[in-house]
Amino acid sequence: MNFLTSRLRKLARNECGGVFVEYLILLTLIGIGAIAGLATVRGALLNELIDLANAISQIQI
Image (cartoon, rainbow, N blue to C red; front, side, top):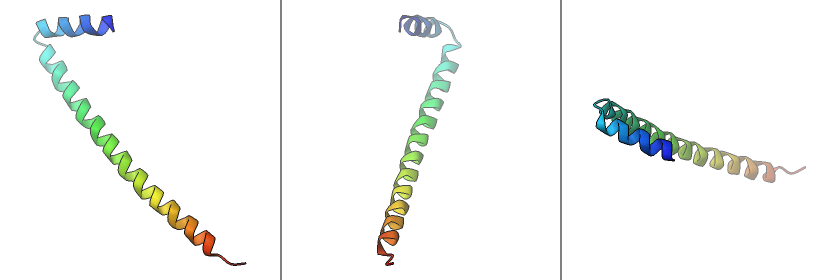
């Protein structure tokens, strides 16, 4: 944690820190998009598995 704060302070004094912030914002947006996408896939997969379980339970031997 100490390394991270010292690195952030050093970047704040440097002009390259702006580029770092831009990359950080970009990675944050990509992360949020990935989480939202995975949540959607999870919901669709869960619905398909429930439909499959219902179909299997309707089979009469």
